[in-house]
Image (cartoon, rainbow, N blue to C red):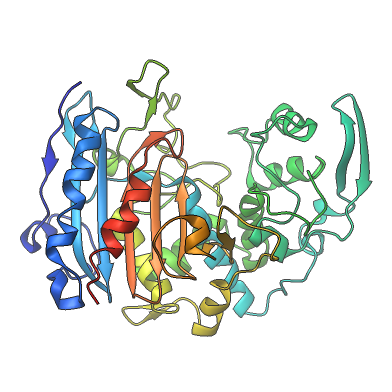
Length: 414
């Protein structure tokens, strides 16, 4: 296996080459109550994954009390071109788009545009009289009416009955047959096609990770009267200085866009072909609020710090504090979970029980991840944000996300 290079931590001087708006400051770990010696353990762990050829490159970041204490890059963003992973590398963040879309929805909630208990069909008529799978096969389905009808609350917390077509049920088969991800679809066409398919289960009865956040993207468009992507730019990205976040990478930034790799059966990294023109190089017709954004570590740190600050960053208020606190509550029933020891709020996984989750962390810690193994965590109790990002599929194939918990929390001496 090749041994890739490690890119050292970047200095204040290096920051000037990036198009960052008011970059978050870098300080010594000790100035915010962390141990430099303990945080130095991150680098050899991540470098080992690169040296073993298990991943092309990794970016890691740790921030406490609004100040960056660790920002490091390892390996390559492009193996074939031998281009190093850098602080300003642009990543596909896939499902880390979901918290951003949910923030957009909650902006409209604060404006009184809807109530969480409102039926989805009240704003998206295509969901009127939606049916639920009961039994049978694709050619012999038995359906029943949704009772109760799915609500906006159900969409946000993934209890709507919608699903991703990753399973073996007839509903999964029907979704794949319907080609809901047709690149020629608009958001409205996507939603219309999806609403014509049966739900996997009755709304409210089960946490089922799903396409519901893509439906919310269309809801934002309906309620705001502007294209979804424009709303995100105007109300979130521009105010927060998220200069490299969007649904595609402009031509003048493509040199910073990381390649995406898959781990093959013969245990090698293979670059994923993303079509012609490659996905993310042109604006999509149906921008995916559930998984379509690209971003940088710096941009997403700004988003997370806004959440940690209860809705505000650098004088720009996106949400009010009570709204953010409400979003970070566990909105699932006690018998529902988004993962072992994990509940779910509005747009974020919520750590319910660290012992059951078998990892160190604070109760209420908010997090989520993306399909290409990008991860973030927001610990309100410790005023802590930390991340580990790469571009590797399938999701969860590497353990570095689990190793970040003791590496970061273990650097808190008090």
